Length: 237
Picture (cartoon, rainbow, N blue to C red):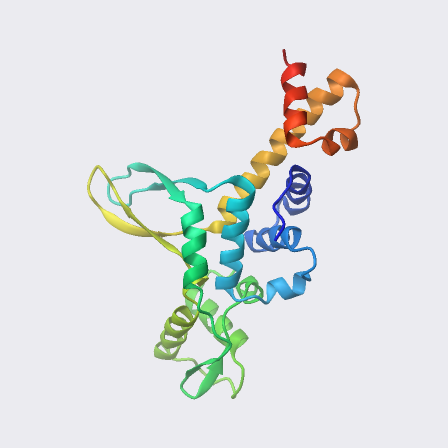
């Protein structure tokens, strides 16, 4: 896996601006794994995708993941710091996805993928979304005329067990009211915020260096990060 260079971040930010987070995650993976077709990445099980994104985030931006959360009981805002390196390591250790389908009510289902989530990305009805996901993952057997709530729950539970990193939850505790709850870790959002921040910093550096020295953007981007940072410091002195 390649780490994301400054130029990669600039290209990703430009091509991914305004896209859904699912698409942004795929673009980032394709930049890191250029030999893997985008269609193939879209069909990775979610746990495999999340592990790769966590590893890419740590390799490209360091191990500290900084975020925030709001207590649902008292409204206190919490600053959250996660050890991304530890998370990526544990994620890799815990990834036990299997190619074997899960079976519910005599029907076989495969693991969820990014492509499946994209089909329900704008669906607001939870039950309808669950049905569409079940139908998307169905491998054999005819679709029933009506899915029962029990079947949908069993499918969701078995898929979560079969692919434990398809969703990562972080345990939180409010220091003010001692409320305890869990938040879902959105690794795509963590990664994309870093990509966008680096792209904006890079554009500012390009602007200053081009204005000061008359260099073309391509020439500035060809500089190493360390050399460009020094020129930027000199240009502002």
